[in-house]
Image (cartoon, rainbow, N blue to C red):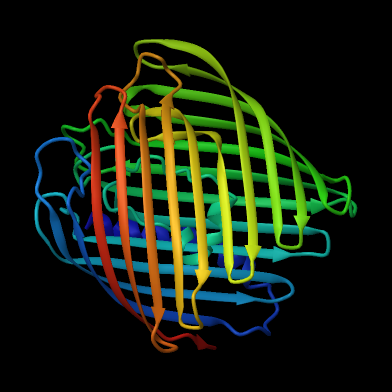
Length: 406
């Protein structure tokens, strides 16, 4: 009963603002609706990513999704509703039998200004997390650091309810000058956290960015941001301020790079201590297209909230490569790694190193049927333990999708 009421409430919070904005938008472009259904078979020799004795996990999963999109000269709308149902799986790792996801993003475009609203609600777990970027715009992963830094944090399937709301506004003052303001709200609540170190939290962020085009290929950026983190159940409060400067350069029509460096200062209080800390931030983005192949890379240091009741500095690296092998076959290679460090020196539990490597082969049999096979390797090492946990997994999926224009 709790999950149903939570779904209705989250859906109302996400849908209401979009109905207000969309209602005043002129009709014209078709609304594209893309329903899909897929089955997945998996095998994982260490799904919990634990160093303790364990059994392998194997099973099958059914996924139903509904994706919608509409774009005109004045607006852009994208949405995704998805339900994952675990049909069969051995062991205690996959205790949650279903995951739900609802995501919407709307942008209204003016001659010089742009308003955007994006929001999502998901009910998943850290062991079986669901992603939005991979389904709506996988290229966005090369530009925005992943704020879900809790992968591998616990070795049991704990339900997580996460609601994210991010409005933004940008305005172009001249062909060379533009400003953007963005607010973010993140509310995370866990279920049945006994014998774990997970805590509910809220995270607020506000940032302002200025873009100045120096030449046709070079753009100078400055960013000022604030973040507020609250974990009420453990009385932990974090307030942070950061400043970054950067340079974006287009090397050619098919290659670009963005470099940012800055400083952050954070003050924290808890039931047992309080203090201040300062550290540097940096981010590097790069993208290159060569014929049928596309490369993207991102690495740097960012600061994120964690379900461990902490704020962590996360040094992360993401590399993606996709290549069109033929008209019907595509290969992708994904590498993700991060090192998390709590900003409090006396809190080592969240400090760890994590790496994921995943090659995938996708075969589009017909316009509506496709098959993909992938392998996933994960490795994690915690500062409080010298031993490393490793996982090898194989996935095989078959998908049916049928786009429809209204």
